[in-house]
Amino acid sequence: VQLAESGGGLVQAGRSLSLSCIASGDIFSIEIMGWYRQVPGKQRELVASVTSGGTTNYADNVKGRFTISRDVAKVTLQMNSLTPEDTAVYYCKALVPIASTVEYLEVWGQGTLVTVSS
Image (cartoon, rainbow, N blue to C red; front, side, top):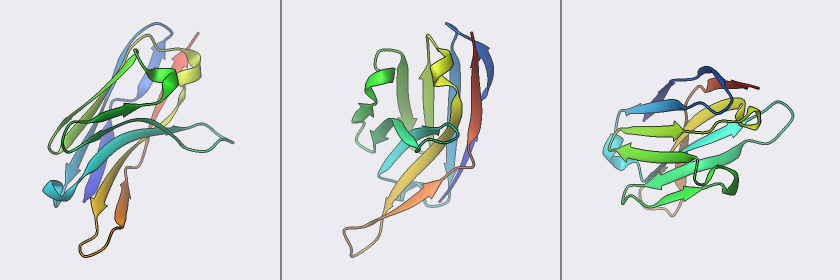
C-alpha cells in the first residue's frame, strides 16, 4: 500500500481547505485510514480517522470543524473554520492488518503542509 496526499496550502483563518489521500496497491486490505498532523517540536497527533466500516474518530480540537470521509481508496479531510493553531504538516496514515497476527502495518504518506494565516 502506498499513500499520496494533496490539497495543502496557505489559507486565511476562518476559511476552509480539503485534503485528499489516495491509496494504491492492496487497497482492500486497509482497515483504518486517518489524518495526523505535526508541528515542529511536537509529537504527531491524530486529527481524524475512519474505519473500513465507516466509523469515525476525531480529536477534540477539530470536532465540529473537520469532517473525514472515505471511499475505498481515497480519504478526504474537509477542514472548516481553520485557525492558525491548525497550521501543521498533515500526514495520511493507513493501517493494514498483518495476516495471521494481531498486528498492523502502518503506512504513511509524505505529508502536506497546511498554513493558516491570521
